[in-house]
Amino acid sequence: MLVISYIVYLVASICFIFGIKKLASPKTARQGNQLAAVGMLLAIVVTLIDQRILSYQWIIAGIIIGSAIGAVFALKVKMTGMPQMVGLLNGFGGGASVLVAISEYERIYFGTQQFEVNTTISIVLSVLIGSVTFTGSLIAFGKLQELITGKVIKYPFQHPLNGLLILGVFIVGVILIINPVNIELLLIITAVSLILGVLLVLPIGGADMPVAISLLNSYSGIAASMTGFVLSNNMLIIAGALVGASGIILTIIMCKGMNRSLLNVVMGGWENAGAASPAASAASPKGQVKSIDSEELAMLLDSVSSVIIVPGYGMAVAQAQHAVRDLMNVLEKKGVKVRFAIHPVAGRMPGHMNVLLAEAQVEYDKLLAMEDINDDFPNTDVVIIIGANDVVNPAARHDQNSPIYGMPILNVDYAKTVIINKRSLNVGYAGIDNELFFYPNALMYFGDAKEAITRLVNELKSSS
Amino acid sequence: MEGLTLLMQIYVFVLAIFVGFELITKVPPTLHTPLMSGSNAISGITIVGALLSAGVGEMSISTILGFIAIIFAMINVVGGFLVTDRMLKMFKKK
Image (tube, rainbow over the protein chains, first blue to last red):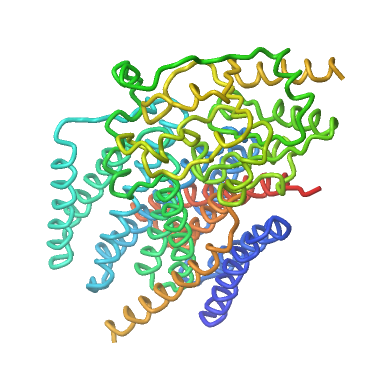
């Protein structure tokens, strides 16, 4: 019996590996996800026939309740709410790891078995990582859902306090490993780790969320791996390690996209980040800002041959993706070549813009990554920026005093004309003015993204 | 013996991380969100541990913790796979 379950666990692990492999192309990705789901189903079914399971009423109740909640979440969530959704799911994964680890500890504690050193170590790590993932993800969810301010939150003694707590968990953990029959110590570790999760994510600002979400994703995988160590189950170790690796890679990509170290992001970001400080604008570039209205813009777009659209978080906030798709369609009808340039950290999570535009039925081969399209800006007639700011600020290329200096940006200013759709001249996340607005080839097109783009589309339709 | 088991598990862990790195570097940026939500669902594999905790028979703290863990893990698994499928359905080429 045991042999059969181990063979099925191996098959499930292979399903996960090939499932992720198929995510390498949008053509096979859906199939890959389904393959991974089949692997999960196999793992659950074979566990259910395990001899150690004696009663099923709690199991059935738990499966029904959990599946129902998960299905409602998955089917109800809007595409713009996807970052919150992923944040929340990370949290539940972490939470499950903590509960399983404590439950396993209880079982040994009240049972006849002895604690083995490696089991205790795994339990401590599982509780630590799982708890940080759980509360950290809930805070990330709160920030993305705007239940908590998305700004950088600083609190007194931030770094010494966190350092002390981490040291505390470490010391209590070592004591527990040496002397494992002490359930209070495990509960202390759990409590402190839960607090740590809150304190570590609270300072991270809104636009740094892609990093935080990726990192928490990685943690949830590592927590699952640790549960695998607790239960001596290789499938859990493999599945968790795959997810852990995925989260780490995404974290690295996101950090590179902002030219910042992970440490810098985790510590709480730029000096002025998130704070719309008037002091910043006083020292910033000044000049004439030119604006354009929808009628003039429609006329301008009537005589061009290539357009690149640069979407940012503002498009997601305004839910303007369908209006943007209409703009693409009406321009293409006029024979204009339309493409999209996606900065790696645009939005609140990796790939955020791609999902929104896919929802609006923009074909994915029109969405180009920064390195694939950056050389094309000089040959482009018009760039339309919709709700992006810091990722198109040319100061990142040349102004060594700028906090975003060195960050890779989309070279939109090399295009013949740059249209910036924005609600106001306010600063972006980095808290600095964007000198692009004052460039001679830049024109501001003010208004809420959805409303302004719809207006432009109507203008273009009536003029043709 | 016990030390050897642990060592074998560390082997598996390290090798799986390398496999993960190889696979995930090939995922294009356009699929990064589905990659996250899909891999997230895979991390719900802790369900296996939760099932074992909740099914031990007699009513105990372990059972209750296992029960809650099942709910959490199933939200993760069902929510993750379904939402990923919903997203991937939308990715189309001309």
